[in-house]
Image (tube, rainbow, N blue to C red; front, top):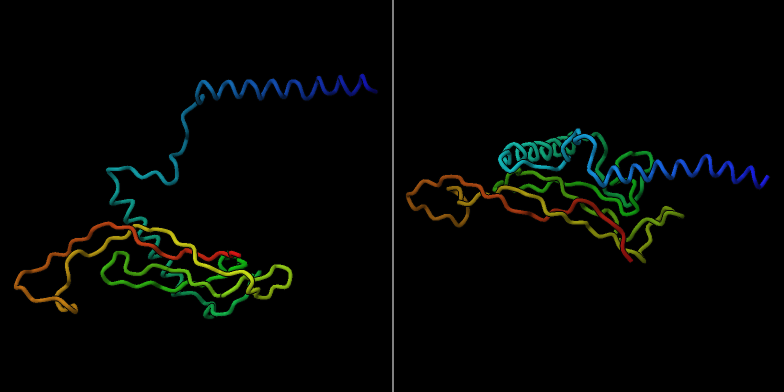
Length: 181
């Protein structure tokens, strides 16, 4: 029986180790064929307008989905396991509100708002205030209007026509919530 075990080991595991070794050697020399797809987040420097336009369009889609949502307003500190969205299945659930700023493109951005002061205890499914729900922030690229639009508060009419000029800046937005002790 011992001989049979050694023979099985030699026939099955040793050739598999040799195959893995050959594969590792092949990787050191470089890929055998070029990659078939570009990285998902790769932005070509000369194509930044298209990428920014796609980004802004995806944010507009999220805002549209949020506005057209058939679910009642999310205001309760509770987990809903029947929903597939992670913001309602989290132990630190959050809802989205629309952050609106007319001097920014996109003017509307979904922003997370924590629904609990504490966190949901996974065993009792009740809020536990020995922990705290806090927002998670991310910096998002937006375009800001550089000159004031005539008629805005604090704008002094100077007789010059203001040409709208936008500059890309990073803005901090809450994108979700998490639990901390």
